[in-house]
Image (cartoon, rainbow, N blue to C red):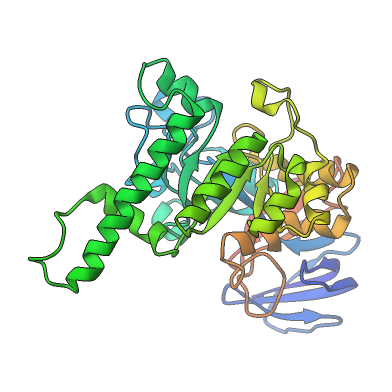
Length: 386
């Protein structure tokens, strides 16, 4: 049991307490308020500090691109086939990667990690806590979503091999073909009503697509350019699928269309130069423009593109470019949790939720700020050494 006292409590659920307390017990938040007392609790004095929910990176490749390793630790893109829905990030994440420790030191307690963007359909994402030595014990949700991708990365990967897709038309056609096959496979299974004699021949790849077709999980669509964003929306609408837009670099150019489609956005990373044409209109203003349009927005690092420990700075730069403090915090807490559909467990400091709490030395959106303590499931997993 841990009692955090005297901190500035930012719940990300609409409540701020200038000098408040949070009581954690059995891995859950059991009380939030002022002047709390618990005889049996370990007391952590957070005076002059900020207390917030653990931050959530809603799109990264943590554990799939190992730090400083090279090819032997590069497990993010299966470049041998553009259609690989049966791949599971669960089987590729390496919890011993030192970047997990960086996540804890950066106040990031939960991430969505999964395949990269070289394939039309890349495989299944997973949501996990950032502390542990076994991926099976760190998992919150799997599968989270089915990764699909649009734009330059696919053209480069398969165009160089002289095979489909080497154009945007080819990529969309291949995606539609796969979705059509999955739809027919699902229809045949439904019609068979459990009679194995009437069921279609077992297809491992199509089985992996069933949660998508049944709207149990969304397509997680890598799309930077405006036309790719609208193609993702178009295809999802054609097949009546759930969709989240990832990166959405030119989302500010088509914000009204995204709002009309009622699709959430996980935007970023905005750090760095435009290393390819589809990034040329990148700006930290995108989150504020999308939020003003009424779109649910989260902010990502796309680790290792931006180091996982700098998620707070990504949100801070969005605030500097017009996003309010409240919306910037929500973009890396409750909004991220809501888009990932895990908001019943994480994303805000509320009674009954997981005891994922971070104590910061000052405003976490400022460059000089840093966590002095990170708690996951009620366990202190990181402390700043002074």
